[in-house]
Image (tube, rainbow, N blue to C red; front, top):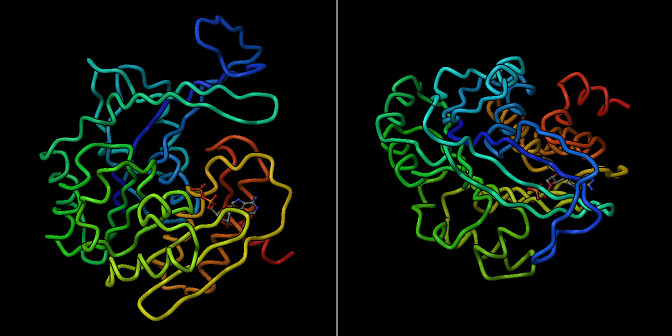
Length: 295
Ligand code: ADP
């Protein structure tokens, strides 16, 4: 099983002619409120990829049926706590006609994970289980330490990247998952080869997934390096490409699929995700991924 300590956000998405300017009041032509947050997206992707996933996190006074939506996707929500006196995590997202976005994020309930919450969730973990983390909740270091103490596998996707990530005990990770921007910020390098060299020398016992958008992905484990090219598709909306990749890769990896095959499987899932708009609704099913790979 995977214990995903992750964010749950209400994404408020506004269509605007341009980003609002200082002092300007701007009308939006369309508004949607949808389930988001890297944590929730990755839990849904894992569940859709047939992995057993426990989402560990918190939601505030306004739930909007999001816990129900996650359950319907197959996510175990027993460790999601309701915090009635705090705002739910949310994002105010402006989208312009050329599909650029600008985002204000408020952590809210996502920042309330307590030691007791961590320990009670991990009490249910069994040997070989995984703990998955992104950088949208509090207590990241504590969760890594507690998971490490219990000899669990730990996967960390430091998104969004912050300066404090470098101070975390990243050498305790089983798997570090970064996109190109995050990798550049973490290593200070901009060339892909230099990034790989830097990550390998900084975290020699950690497996690394370096996703490169429409170029594809590198997997690095010690001396073993494996590249998988992305599928050539017409991308409409790349939101949750990385979240879909992570969910499907981890599900495949847990089921002992060979690396090359797991990379291809996750690339196929994320290629399908970028062909549809939105986050949650764009995450494909196993059957869709299998059909795409056979086409
Ligand atoms: P993130 O969403 O975290 O920024 P990436 O942009 O690196 O992550 O995308 C993750 C994976 O999704 C890539 O490795 C690739 O397999 C797939 N992907 C992303 N963008 C595209 C695209 N335009 N066409 C096909 N596959 C894509």
